[in-house]
Image 1 (spheres, helix red, strand yellow):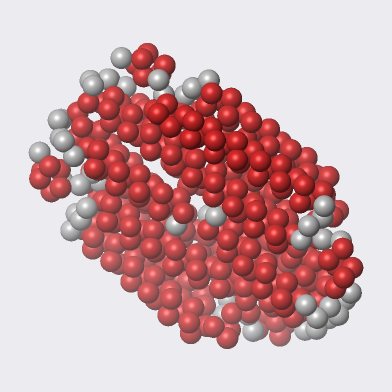
Image 2 (tube, chains in turn red, orange, purple, yellow):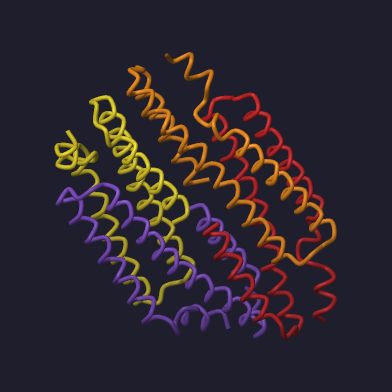
Length: 99
Length: 99
Length: 99
Length: 99
């Protein structure tokens, strides 16, 4: 049971959506480099950094949701590693909140 | 006085360092896409997202420091827009803390 | 099944620990008022605010961990509201990360 | 000049407002203890923790704004410790953002 879970991570259904968002975030990182190269006004750059941070957090929350849903499905399916997965999820939440 | 300030934003001294960090962050965004493409384990992807968020915040704090130093220098030099710049800086801090 | 779950929230095992931590946080809030009354140095007050925020987040993470563990246990026990609880937990994480 | 600055911290004008907000935050800490005593639903407790965290951050941003305004005023008035105060402010922002 565990193996099939590992082979199909929780976010698989949203893979394309997550990839599209990460591509946009990569674009934001490039846009920020252009702004710094052009010596644009610091506060405008900071506004873009905040937007990029929000976008990144939004991806993290999507991944986390899917992971949590997976933990519960796995538990229902009788997987015995639900507790271990949950501990990982908790640690990920803690890192995310502090990141 | 204001114009010369606008022409030389506060982070100019650290421009190369800031650009290098943004380049690395762009690389992290690409790395994340690869991880999702390869369907790597969700928790490992989340760990990378947290690392990228920290790197981004670190850039923001550098930009903000330089902007604040600039506000004070500008005030000492008799610039009359120190208050307006400071208000912008406060708003940027608030966005950053909430981002 | 649901009723018994409602009657025994997930954090019950750690109730005393959570209460002790909240009592300390209440004390920090009183300490901050004294600092402001005495017009202590702003930066020192901010340091205490940061400490109190960390303590509060630590309580939140404990509550969340217990809730998530409960979701999984509930799912294993055949509770049919695991999905609804998980959605609540996800929303709580999102609020926490943005708080 | 420095002494008078120390004697009148930046937030003095908003002292009553800051105290009132801290009093409310203390009340929130007591309310949370009641919720835990009564074993209320975990997610509702977490919602209150998020509200309290927001209130606390709002106090921090007010204190920080006043400190920054003070740094600039001090710099204009010829105070020679503007740089040191600014460094403290930067460190406080960093703690706040990570808190």
